Length: 156
Image 1 (cartoon, rainbow, N blue to C red):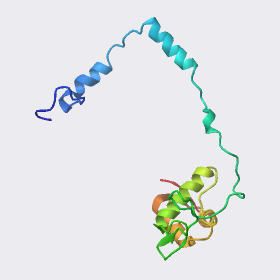
Image 2 (image 1 turned 30 degrees about the vertical axis):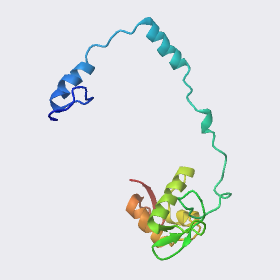
Image 3 (image 1 turned 90 degrees about the vertical axis):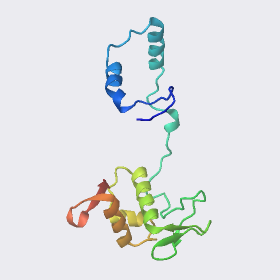
Image 4 (image 1 turned 45 degrees about the vertical axis):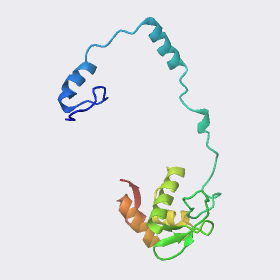
């Protein structure tokens, strides 16, 4: 309970939950003809697919491979140390695991039908990071579907 709370506070307290649920699941109010007409008009104006969703056509082969900087500069990262990547444009260092994870998500967003495999992510990263590091990130954040040599990963 909140003692000395303002009276107009828009909150439902634990002791009020049962009464509140009964009030919203009770008998429905009859809509006036005017409100019903407005609702029908709004429903008729519904556009199932936005005209702003037009995506450019692209293919895997025509895209430049590599890990891009998550800052606005969009530069391609290079290896700085065993744990960090460096953006040559803005000089920002990014943890390698974070950059790999972001690149995996980017790959999956752009190509949802392709399976997430260590080799495909290695190529997508442009060979900047090792397959060992990619596998570590995949095992940490994704569920492996074991098929021997052809293991792939899905979101957890």
